[in-house]
Amino acid sequence: MNFSMESAVRLGMFAGVLLVMAVGELLAPRRRLTVGKPLRWFSNLGLVALDTLAVRVVLPAGAVGMALAAQEHGWGLFNNLSLPGWLAVFLSVVILDLAIYLQHILFHAVPILWRLHMVHHADLDFDVTTGLRFHTIEILLSMGIKIAAVVLLGAPALGVLIFEVLLNATSMFNHANVRLPLWLDRLLRLAVVTPDMHRVHHSVIVRETNSNFGFNLPWWDFLFGTYRPQPVEGHEGMTIGLAQFRDERVDRLHWMLALPFVGSVGDYPISRDSEEAQARAAEPKNTFMTAAPDSRTVEAHREF
Image (cartoon, rainbow, N blue to C red; front, side, top):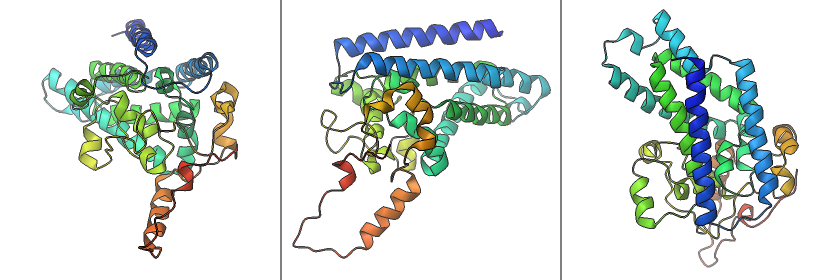
């Protein structure tokens, strides 16, 4: 497998899935968009271009290149086991997906990493380009984690390529603003994260943001108790984004790049969310009164 072949496969799948999802959003939109689409698309796709350039400069070999190097030097688990090739490929795809799931939780749990990841969540709308919107530093860190997992696992290059293509394609699919029949959504989410499943993760409500962490396979959310089937306010009524960033500036490229360094993390890191939940649980309850709603779900703070 050479670099040109890998690039052609990845670029072809990227363009194809982006086009199909974009057309699907026009023909059968799930929600009404709230901000101007041209500027968002220009900014989100511009960030993708910067990310791709940065990865090619800083980590030119990429995950597939490191898989080939690991195979040549006999590094990693699968390069030292006598497994059938198809099984090593399959297990690599599944285990790497688990690694990305755990990485995703890590970026929600550690405040300094959440600063990077909140660029993805600050998008005021949810469509196919949201699945491509990640801060450049996050992309570089993610690639470093992925390369480490590939080398330790000794994943075959074919398995890594399949995983990378699937991850990119499913990220665009499950962020797409497309309406699927309920029966089809229920069927699909047994094997893949659907748009309705992942949209919950982009809710402004903290407990919903910290759920449904899967990008590709939904099984990890089912197994580890992070699955939330539907948003409390419904898909049409829910608010997308982060409570502290309700200004359309966050959908501009230069603000996205600056956001981790100047924006407030809010109450979204998992540690803060847990501490606040414990504090609320410890408060005395008045059984004759209904508690007021969490202000984070109804107020838009302008700290940025």
